[in-house]
Length: 442
Image (tube, rainbow, N blue to C red; front, top):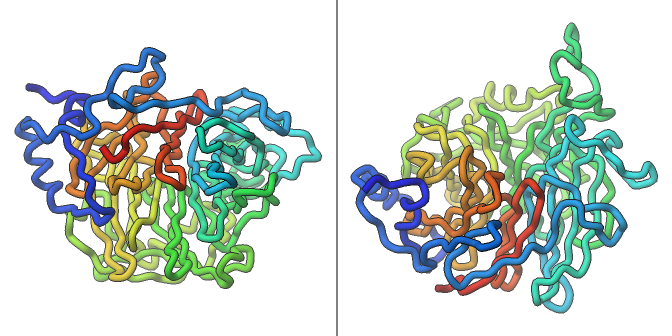
């Protein structure tokens, strides 16, 4: 039987093991795939076609659209489009607070906010919105929480209850000497300030002060994750020759106080291209090197990092923390150029290639990801065809958990309510946030 993209992942299994994920069985998985052998059936079962043609889920699971583009929010503003990275926080009386990114830029979307609304750059339409969901998965309120930023792609949560929203754009109001801004970057839309920063958004409290966290570096940010033991913040970069960064805050809980920015170097392998030169399941010892020009005038931070031996990653994207380890995706890494997932052991300072997709039928451009309460990685695809939420078990087996039945737009922002009973996820365009529930324990 020829394995199509859909029926291949429908055959693989799921385990209820812990978040300690083992890479070695992936080698067996790849050999089985190549021979066309069947894998274990997922305990969630096959996906069932949604009569509403929005979200295919396994039998026994339900979903609800809780917030969609254009709806009027409590502050009178419409819900922006392009729903991207998102995180869940505990609210009052069992409610869940979601802080959600909107990856909008001035080349395609005009900023229509009133001038009196606090904004970082009034030309830019990106930012975040905040949603409060009650214990019955009903929307209580939603409102604008960050404004005037550019292409807010993903981000991550802090240990003190805030969201770090990341700009995936290095737009500047000027060009390098000898060049025309319009010639080089016509899509930047004549921004009035430098972009390429992180911004902090409290989970509660209304509209955040739009203050760039310049010490965390100026580059095409994608996502962050915090080591709760040290307070160090790890950051991914979305470039074909990106680097991986670590920020050491001067004052825990006060990122505006500054800190030290470092880049990852693999010991005895300077400037290694991890997209092609690492094998699955082989730990690499890591070192960290300090960077100096953390707020460059142009998109040059990764060049300083690489000059100091930094490892190169193929488009770093989503990142998450679980049980002393970090997991992050590289969208176009691997021999097939369709995706990798890396694992970093914080205590041992070792990097390991955990997943390398052998083809689009297995995993197609992995983006945002989370370790679910039941121990599996849940990964959002941002590929070129039909889009899935892909589960990866602790044994390294893949399965489909959901399919975008509406269109081929990416999934984004996957996260779980604090009680673990509800999964939240976005469809990027037309922007909508969905709540999913059912028997996650199987």
